Image (tube, rainbow, N blue to C red; front, side, top):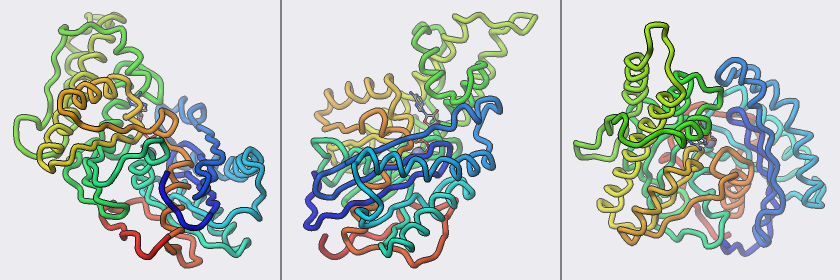
Length: 353
Ligand code: KG4
Ligand code: ZN
């Protein structure tokens, strides 16, 4: 576990998209409790996240979830020393709920509150595990909104090595799943369908792998999936379940392969042999297995968060916030959030914890 010199109990709030996540992290004892409420059912009938519905539901769920999480940890609000809330990037209305509740609680309790960058939360999620990865490491962050490779020299010392020039890989999973007629949220559904697909029936391109560099592109894969589907359709516009599974297989294979190729390149380019994978798509079994193979072949130390901390959760926000609060960082008493926020603009940790 990270060494902290003082005990801080930090309440973390995650409300950037369609999950309400709450957790309490103790800088001496570690994670004390965490709870997640997913809005999947609310958005499923629309085939994607409806921002206004997301905000309204965060309003309904955040306070009850805080009460339940504190009860699980056998704590009361009076035991909390600081609050960490996701302040971006994400849906502005949804972010404002967490920021508003976090700030208001901090104000009423007379304790500090810190705005946490959602992707820093993902990036540090593997630090909730034992053993923790040691700095420096290369992080592959793969979520619904981001696909990036980051050189992490220390907390707050982030160098973006490459990122998607168009869609994020999670977004490509979701859009391709929709094309294949799968329900929202598409990524895990597509992975399930791909498990029934056959290798070698279709071959999708590996975008941006035959030129140097560490950037990604995923919008072409989705178009390739659409064209493959159209060609496979009967005159009545029908496609067999097996063909849909074969297309899902080929899409996933190409999406994963291009991530693995770029990870290998990032390790070669930086000479850093510790690789950390985080964000929703890091829950993908095919990606995890392909990266395990890469790690074995190249003697790379590989770290993932546990499955429930791959996707959005409050624990990663409580942890990232606790590091910053322990180093004396906190915000003015103003409620604000940023839908866009550059990861490499974050400050390093200063002072002793
Ligand atoms: O990190 P996350 O929970 O939220 C964002 O910050 O975006 O990531 C959600 C993304 C979605 O695009 C979802 O489809 C994808 O992660 N995802 C998966 C899997 N589980 C979640 N994609 C592929 N395979 C999975 N098993
Ligand atoms: Zn996320």
